[in-house]
Structure formats: C-alpha cells, structure tokens
Length: 293
Image 1 (cartoon, rainbow, N blue to C red):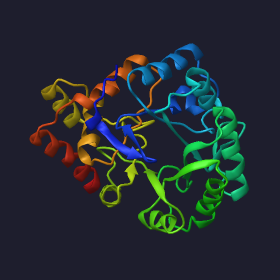
Image 2 (cartoon, rainbow, N blue to C red):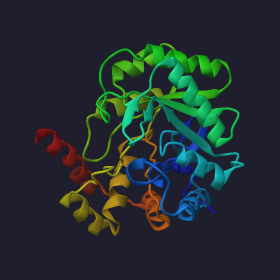
Image 3 (spheres, rainbow, N blue to C red):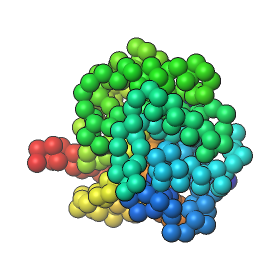
C-alpha cells in the first residue's frame, strides 16, 4: 500500500505523479562511476521504492555509465503502468569518470538510443537535456540545437516528453518556443535558492520543477536551523529539508537519492511532516542568510 496520498501529486508528462520520487544516481559506484558494491541491495532499494508508492524515477545512462539504467531494468521490468521514468542526455563519462559535455545533435541521438536499449523500452517517458555549463549551475547561451534535436526524436516516437536541466529562465523560454517542456531540473534546496523566481514562474505555467541535490548532494546541507526545526516537529533534518521543498511550491517534485532502504523510507515519510508557519519562516531565512554571505 502506498505511503503517499493523492494530494501529494502533480502532473508530469500528462500523468499524476507522487511528489516524492526517487533519484537513481546513488545506485552507481563511488562518484557515480562503476557498479555498486552490493548489486542486490541496489535492486532492493528500487523495488522498495515502487512498493512504497513511488511512481517517478529519475535516472541517466551516464550514471555509471549505463549502470543505473541496467539496475532499473533488472529490478522493475516490465514496468508498472503508472511508473514514469525520466532520464537525461547531454553528457558522457571518460575512462576516469570525468563528466564531459556531449551536446551535439548526433550525441543526443546516440544517448537516447542507449537509454532505450538499457531500459528496454520502445519510447522514453521524459528526456531532460542536461546543459553542461558550470557543471551544477547554468550558463547563458542558446540551447536551440539541443532542443530541436530532441523535438525531432519526439516526432519519431522515441521520446514522449521533453524537459530541461541546468538551465536559465531565458533558456526555458527559448525551448518552449520550439516544443512543449514538461519539467525543469536545476540545483535547488533550502540553502541554494538562486532559482526562487524560476520556481514561481514555472508554477504559474503548470510546469514541474525538479530540484537536483535537494539535500545538498555531494556536500550535504548543514544547518543549525534545520536541526532545531527537526527537533520541534519530531523529524530528521533530512525530512525537514524535503518537507520545506514540498511546502515551497505545488509544482516541486522531489527525487532524493539513496542506496539505503532505511534512508528511502525516511525520505518518503517527509511527505507527512507538518511545518508550522514559524518553522517555515525560520527555514525560509536560511536561503536569505546564504544569499547575503
């Protein structure tokens, strides 16, 4: 039985998805490179996520590379009818695991075919084109060639819906002039708030905003305010950080990643955390303080 309720949904790719999903990045080896230490445990986390009601999984064929998609296939194929799998293209890994841009149209086409093969599907639910600028922060510039390439793959029936990752508001507008955009995935959390205006802009348009690194990523969020609020609402700091995002805007969909079933369950329970107005004000101020620092 699902741990989440219908009010915890938002439309993604024309389907209601639960607002706490799952990000598969951490299923790969150290630095998102190579296989996991315990493949069976990775498969168990994916199966537990779906059993708990998660119906939105975020992945990419450059995680590993290929590792997470193959794990998703092993754990979940044939996929539940209500499961939405979102993948990313736009990067590749070298032999040492470095992240390199791969944004030429022919690169994107090859990556889409790699995702299709490794996930074993005829069409991809959603493909985000990841714009490698400053790795985790956007860089200005036209993304027309990349969006046009994905739009062509959509016309061919290989991609159902298109999203963007690591982009600016201007790039979102440019992309929307070419094709419908169903989601934007950028760095955002209670500390990193540079996209406040973009979150609100997309909410008005009914477009999902999917924060990557909702808990800080490779440098987890550290805040005495989080710890204080967590104590007052009987939750963990991680749960409070996720709950704040759910309160922040109705179009925010979460994809916290973990390789631990215990952490997965903890993340899902964030949907039940209630934050009173005083706590929300304290948490909101974290981002203001960081901006002034």
